Length: 205
Length: 211
Image (tube, rainbow over all chains, first blue to last red; front, side, top):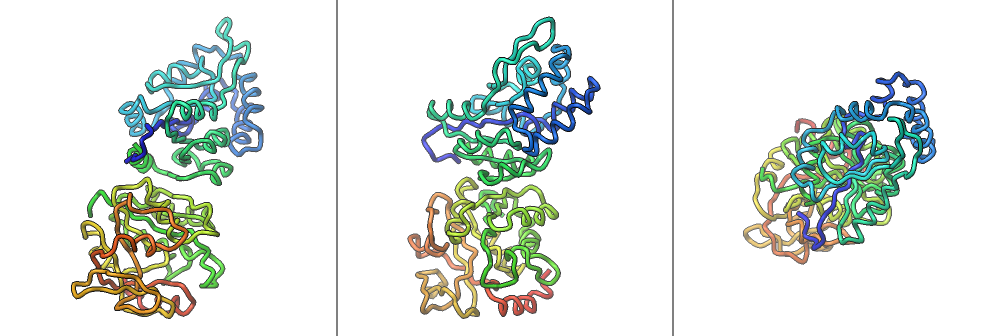
């Protein structure tokens, strides 16, 4: 139980944290651009390519795809059911921070049902024509902290590193794949099982 | 056991006094790593929190062979802290009561059951067996009145159970964290810790037929 006087805000990474499959390979397979994407994803997760560079390259490859079709596809991404239940039960204390574009992810995020923060773009003729904002997750953490929240960040990748460093409590998850080694030195709790994660989140409420 | 208790297993230390070149959680006792022993003895416990530091990745790999629903708690400052810091870190966001469990302590399986079935707060101790022990002084009902480096009726071994919110950050040992709350109920158990190589060979013999 949270004996602190501050309310708790749980901020979740999306891919591999709330979803039990990565969204990028899902798009790549569906639209047959696996080869281009696969290597980029692997290198990014391992921290070999900086997240921002990887993201720009990714949008360049996938931006040509029909946006509405990508959004429909991502809406079907598998989610962790107990974690989803936790988020929906405590939706005012949960938020999702994903580097993915809002135009691709909004249907999935609305289905999850809590506040969400994404990267932004301009869409014309059902295609991404310009990237306008790349989400810096640590800014979301700082905003909530300034509003008086104790922030718990739950993530698994190198692009969660700064947000986890700034957060009051950093939880690394290895439920979908082993978390990036780069985040372990700033991790408070490391959890590999959905039930154990939900138990820890409830203990932090 | 009561579902409101967490068990905090401290495995963050270097184990330098033992001299086997690896953290004590990974040394083999009768074919089984010490952490595997703990997971077997504590398999009924829902909320296990393993505090890791030195050789963390190796301990994680070993634990995941047995169960994946534990919470790993990092003590990044393992080099300059002692068991008190690990217990605090392991317990602070767990259940209302925390049982501290040294990763290098082997408790007889029957006594593990007693510990897990005991309600409320308590301190466990054993017959004196180590050279450099901390002792407990008890009353005629076995309650713990004091800890002492010099003299006492029994040897302090742990485990101990206390309300989470009473556990303060400490640069010292777990018994220092318990001292302000004495007297506390005492439980005499059969327990052996492994600090030195002679402890290690002795415990190998004692625990031969335990599991």
